[in-house]
Amino acid sequence: MRDAVGPIIGVNVDPSHLFWQRMDPLAVVRELGSAVSHVHLKDTEIVEDQVALAGVLDTRPFADPGRRAWNFRTAGAVHDRAWWTAFVAALREAGYDDALSIENEDAGLPPEASVEQAAAMMRSILGD
Image (cartoon, rainbow, N blue to C red; front, side, top):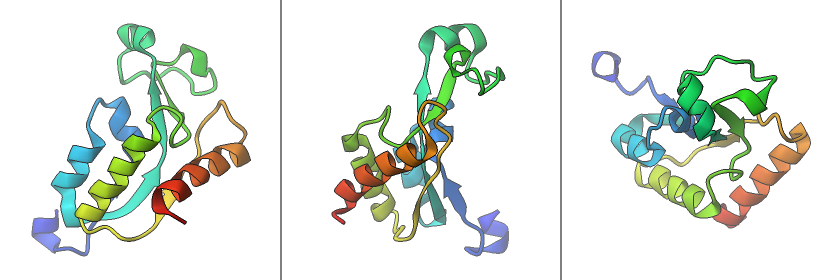
């Protein structure tokens, strides 16, 4: 699309969606480069024994996370600080220097705790 309309169109990178598809968000950011125009911070937990039964396209209800093949989690709950540090570095290498939006869909934590946990980790990475 960018070839057709130019850099007015960009990509929202949400690593959580890439994780459950078994993609490498760092490689995706490197490939997208300057097309990255927005970033969500959210993690994903893969439950291997449930993936074996339902696959990565699991459509079972999010309201029952114990029976799902994958669940959205707070940034840092699954992938550690080192991974998120590498993610920020990849974004910077791609020329992205804008908002990092914490997205909360972790059914295992109260919303405030989820956001506070993600923010604390990101502050430690960004040096704020």
